[in-house]
Amino acid sequence: MPPPIHQTFEAHNFVVCSFVPRMYDYHPLGIPVPYNHSNIDSDEVLYYVDGDFMSRKSVTKGQITLHPGGIPHGPHPGTVEKSLGAKETKELAVMVDTFKPLWLTEEAMKIIIPDYYKSWMEGK
Ligand SMILES: [Fe+2]
Image (tube, rainbow, N blue to C red; front, side):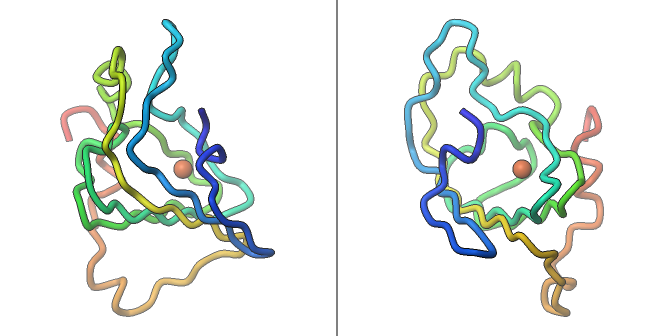
């Protein structure tokens, strides 16, 4: 199911989605990881709390990702294949989608991983 199915809270200017341990889609042709997308109406911040994040190869527990509105993103190379046949996930993450652009603070600038965008390239 696409990420909106995980929405747990809604305000006039943002939504919160909670990714918690759960069974995956059990249809024989179901693909557990989310598809590539670009949120044209919102910036997307995800905090990875715990577990194995099926759609990401290089994101680890405690990290935060920011995907500005309109920037395509989705499963890392190889994660779709890895997810096939998976029955459940233990991932725990919180996502906030804002309906106005976010601004990075100086503190956030200090923890940026400059090569993050390269994580969608094969072999990275
Ligand atoms: Fe997204």
